[in-house]
Length: 114
Ligand SMILES: [Zn+2]
Ligand SMILES: [Zn+2]
Image (cartoon, rainbow, N blue to C red; front, side, top):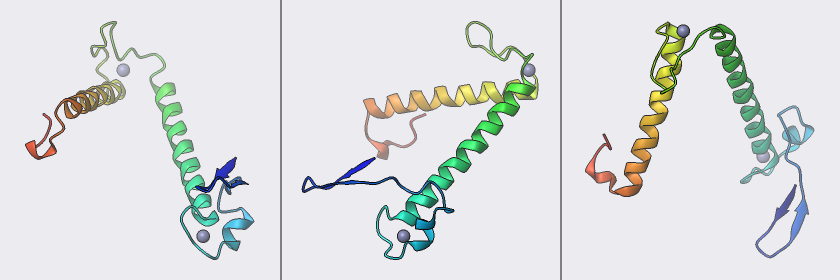
């Protein structure tokens, strides 16, 4: 990747992928987006991502024979696993609705959007 500065100057740079990178230990003059922060951020992102993937794999395996929604996206199976998926979907819908409402009426002092 290329880092571009305001004066038009460009520098080729690839941030450290994790804290095992020698640049993480070598980083001394800590500043915004310095090597150690990039290394930490990338390591955290990788950890979140693999945690997320494990959850998804577990959900897919456990609910392989389940049908949480009918054709109208209404709850069908009522087992605990399907109820969790149904609730996630409902929360997404609520968030999308309150986002749309907040856009239409950008006055947070009016209180909660529901
Ligand atoms: Zn640093
Ligand atoms: Zn189910």
